[in-house]
Amino acid sequence: MHYGRTSPVGADERPEDNLAALSFDAGASTQGSYLVLASARAPAWWDGWRGALTLTAARANRLGYYGIGNDTPYAPDSLTAAGGGPYFYRVSRTSFAARATIQRRVVGPLRVLAGATLERSDFRPLPGPSVFRRDLSAGAVDPSTVPFTDKVVRAGLVLDTRDLELDPHAGVFAEALFASGTGYTRTTADARLLVHPQERLVLAGRLAAEGMGGDPPLAAQELMESSERPFVAVGGYRSLRGYHDGRFTGRGKVLGGVEARYVILGIPAAAQLKIVELKLVAFFDAGRVFGPGEAVRLTTQGLHSSGGGELALRFLRSSLVVVGYGRGSEGGQLVFGTTWSY
Image 1 (tube, rainbow, N blue to C red):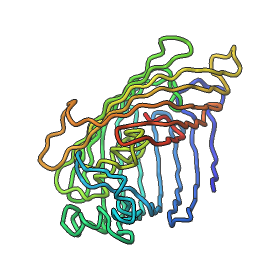
Image 2: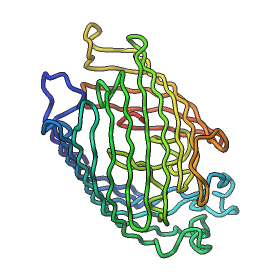
Image 3: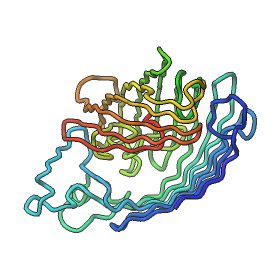
Image 4: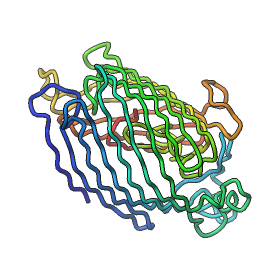
């Protein structure tokens, strides 16, 4: 179920897809997962200010968990009854969170950011043997952090020169963030470049890194921070397409990627900003995680990589749907998103 209200930008030429938006989403699966999400965003309601508030209640009842570290093995045979059962690489995670962010333009495209999050997370082993049950018993996952209440404050700088936020054709988006949670810290840097060498073609690239200090819980290690909202990394649509969500978990993360987006249909053909655009996308992603005691660094050693293609449909300036397929060393995955991967 989805309900939304937006305040459109009107005829003004500006990068935001709307002045403000309210939305409510709710859904459930037959396997016990559910999501209830209420969101309020105001990217351009007040001149020079941006604000966002998100309330979430969610259960991922078949969340992937493969262990902690960059070299955790994955064996499809482990999913058979003889190898461990269908939940060998699965865990149930429940979370309740409130997240608020405010940004203020300092000069030109540079903004300063401040925010806070309160989150309660819990993990539950599913029936039968599993990697999570093993790691919890061995102490690789600290039992005192299951469940865990996390209180986070964060601050940072955001540089944004994109011509359009939903479907940019050119510009730079870069952010440097620092967060202090319950018993740990997090430092994140992310840079994305988009160029428009010809009318129908957009080339995009991304490089991101994150390090954590202190004793971060599993719930925090599974995510990577951003100025909008955290995302699962490493593995999945936002970080490493072609791999299972959260395939690699660690205190440190490095991500990189390039992609080409080519317009194969634009309506109306003569308009500079099309009402409808259909794009063909080719991408290459790479990433890895770092464990305790390892310094986060840019390196080609231990990188996991994937490649694939997508079809992306944009309608007006507020709706984007992306479907595709990515393939890595462990097989392939269908991908789906309502934003660009980056």
